Image 1 (tube, rainbow, N blue to C red):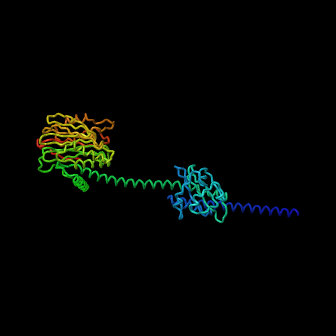
Image 2: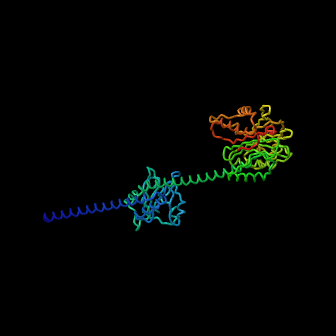
Image 3: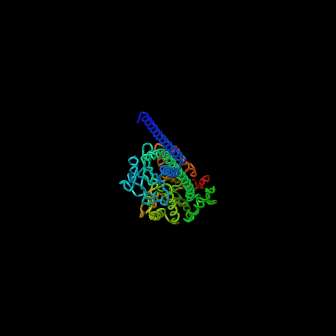
Length: 500
């Protein structure tokens, strides 16, 4: 072969080599362009929605299509337990798949999540890490498998896997890199979608909470009106227990309609005694209570009590106690006997609550006061001559504590113009912002200053003084005050009334 032929051969070989190199570059560029376009398509798909369920569907559909796979799935990591779960699963067995949770490190997906490395498997059944937990549920044969981690800020939040490359071919290393490239934008979109999903759930929960709170507040307002309906509004003759509930409901409905009750005594009724009372619950409903009514022609029954708990449980116990007091009291029954009977009934109810109580029967014809004290705050007697005396006597345990308690009766004498001031510990235990209590000493000093004031304004004045002492501190306990005075005809400007 001469030199010319050799030169031509070398030139031809060089040309063919150059063409081959150029063709390889062209094909590589085309593949790179195709890969770039695919990733751009993925990015568009990922950013087309912020809703978690929609995003997962797009991820699965796009991954399967681009990777030429029969199926795709996204398995998320539970940040609290480390378990893997299927947020979205389609098909007839979707509900069953969503119930599956893979333990940390379980199966190929668990291994990828634990190690943060991709896995390419040509025959899944031959891999020792393979778990058939999902495949057995959906009856779907898995042959080839490609699984890559989904990273967010350096933490694996899930795995993206594609199953069974079409045409029976195996996944390649290039497929691994492509799926990893798909997982990168997926992580950002998925994290945003998860944040949005959490926000939506929080907003829904907040709306439900607000709606429940509004319903509860409405129900509590109605309950408060009904509870206030149990309290007497005027000095009348004894009502039956059934009438007590009926009037409570009627008064609650009237209050709901914006109609107030008559707070004056019965017309033309010249009964020579009066009662003035005020009750202010710490919440919408509470456990303080009082009652008063006439028995026969010359006796006045009155009681004031305090249930140990607060809120609705205390209000129910209060309603039960008032009903029993009303139902069991009869002409000729003493306060001690009444409390003994009521205590047995309350103890049978198997409640953990109890109620302190002070109740009395005042014979307005003789001035004799018979009373019984169930562990309540000691009342004060404001004498007409200006003296302020504690109505001390034997104290018994509160109602509902012991079933065999026999409550004692005690007596004292009242003169015309004398008054008894009863109160609950919401008065004496009221605190200011520094935690100091109002105290019984301060109450007695106030009553000494008020001993010449009309009885009708005493409850409001006492509570106003407590409020001034508290100076804006939150009221933590129910407050109740009652004033019972004998022979109000000596002071015609004073009229018994009811205040809430």
